[in-house]
Image (cartoon, rainbow, N blue to C red; front, side, top):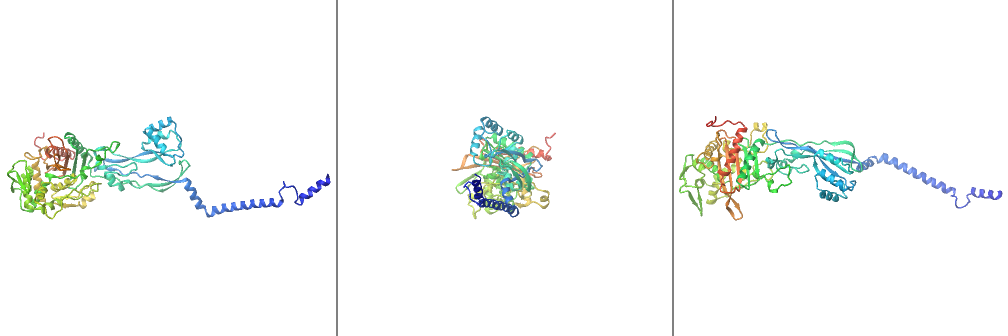
Amino acid sequence: MGASYKKIIEKESSGEGVSSFMPLWRTRLVLLVILLLLFGLGYRLIYLQLSEQAFLKNQGDLRMVRTETDPAHRGMILDRNGEPLAVSTPVESIWINPSFFPELSNEQVTALSALLDLREPALRKKLSASKGRKFVYLKRQLPPEQAQKVLELGLKGLYSKREYKRFYPAGEVAAHVIGFTNTDDEGQEGVELAFNDWLKGSSGERKVIKDLQGRVIRHIKQVSESEDGKDLVLSIDLRLQYLAYKALKESVIKHRAESGSAVVVDVNTGEVLAMVNQPSYNPNDRSRLKVSDLRNRAITDTFEPGSTIKAFTIATALESGRYAASTKVNTSPGYIRVGRKTIRDHSNYGKLDLTGIIKKSSNVGTTKLAQNLGSDLIWLTLFKAGFGQAPGTGFPGEGNGMLPMQRKFRPIELATLSYGYGLSATPLQLAGAYTAFGNNGERPELTLMSRSEVSKIEGIRSESVMSERVASQVLLMLETVTEKGGTATRAAVPYYRVGGKTGTVHKVGQGGYQDDAYIAYFAGIAPISKPRYSVVVTINGPSGDRYYGGEVAAPVFSGIISAAMRLNNIPPDSFDGLK
């Protein structure tokens, strides 16, 4: 027994043994391989730490560090007196990461939809469509307190994001001038669109660390600071804007008109003090908005200005030196034949001086003047008055109107041009043209921006339309239109001297001029003693028997000017009847 055991020990010592024991050389090989692997791993770790540190950090950041945007505060839009017309308020937008957002119970869907002001089917549809995505908005621009209630539901994967929402204090009164922004705070209409780059500023960026669910764990650094947008001061006087809007809306409703516009311009500076339209819309609630209501008709829609052009025909006659204010023109028998067309007056006015032609709005009188003057002189006066050219306010969709450019006008074309047919203009263009009568013959450049003190000192760019003498003469003629015997007695303003010209034209349809559809308007200056305002009122498609400019548009002018005089404490021209 002892000898057998001794033999076994000797065999094991010599490397011979049963197959269940690993040979010594194999053990050493395994240990060597393990040591080499450990050495390789250690070398790799040292190499990565020393040579690839920046790369590894960047890769880690890509998985955890995110760049977030700091939204810029959009600049305010103010009226000339500092009253806010557009302001931005902080809001919260609710979003989810669908990868972590749980399946909601019916009770949770009901609670969430109520807090988001969403209908349950709409919320379910949005959640269903969000699968496979990383970021989905549930509701944009909620008040902070409402967003907080949503977050208090404690739903995993639901977050809020700070944004800004635009608010318009004047609502529909200034909607067409100001316009509005979309949910991304980008201007879509009006001044908001025209001056979007000025107002919006630039967003900043910051680096943050987020967990797998998208929650911010830590703020790392501010990459760039946000730069708030700049404020914009308009020429609009909000007080006058309200009063003009009220007067226009009342007239459109009273006469059941399709639409209407009114523009008030400072004759000395070219600043647009009021610009209103009907129909309008509420920019704070656009849920029922009609696309047609967005149009700023005062600056985009063109029409034939009709008899308001007669003032420029008279100015051309005076400027030519061939006529004086007292020159008589025989308009008998109340009509004149030009080619195959008969041009008529409302009555046979007989012999009229130039003042009488304006006061009675004689088509025959202006036709005879045009025949003597020729097309070149009349066309040049109209061109210098701004017809056929963009006003240059920078407003989106600004209309150029149309002033025909022809080497030779046919007799009937020259005749109709003299009393306002065959050309077109926007209400703003016509108001700009009439500033020349109140500004010593000079037409200032129109603007929707408030003139700074610097620009007043340096001067305002203007176009000379006529001499100061002629402008003064025509101004006095326009005053007679609002006096007894004129066509616009309803434009008169108690205790103030005002003047202007009515216009009534047939609307153009598919088959030409429509016999029973009209556009009525009035263009005027006030006060005549020291002109300050140029006003144009347009009523499109008034219903019923009252459709003339003197009946429909002139009273709106009177209401606007009466209010403007009170607002600005302009002393009366006459104290007759005052106690």
